[in-house]
Image 1 (cartoon, rainbow, N blue to C red):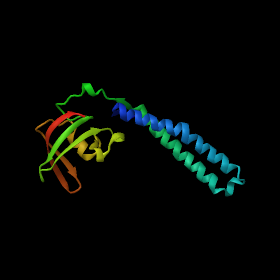
Image 2 (tube, rainbow, N blue to C red; image 1 turned 180 degrees about the vertical axis):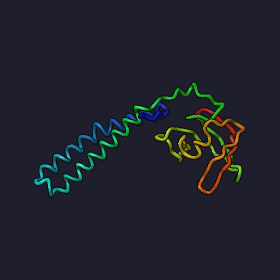
Image 3 (spheres, rainbow, N blue to C red; image 1 turned 180 degrees about the horizontal axis):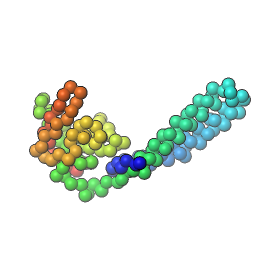
Image 4 (cartoon, one colour; image 1 turned 45 degrees about the vertical axis):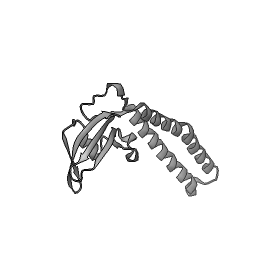
Length: 158
């Protein structure tokens, strides 16, 4: 079962580049490490061989996960975004009702989330709370110490 995730062209390219790096460069390195360790003798007492096999298994798991993400990845046509509601790739300006702080976040897929640059995942608590909201609405977001309320001030394209 594949989960659909929406990505920008930049985010999708980053995923594909990472997968290419793992398959074309890391996978041959892992195979070579196993071959080198195998050449060192008795496999039953060869910790280097065991470590190389385990590293290869982890690499293959990462490759499979990335392939699964890419299989469900969809490119977002940013020109078709509806700015009447907060959706994936919406830039949302919010105001915390408690302290009056204003923040602007861009809602993105999990793989593109980067809080330092103001990109939050649509699956994060704040992201989920903002999805589908319109300007003027209040987003009530459950956090560990209660409920935070944010006024939706502005929605634009990312």
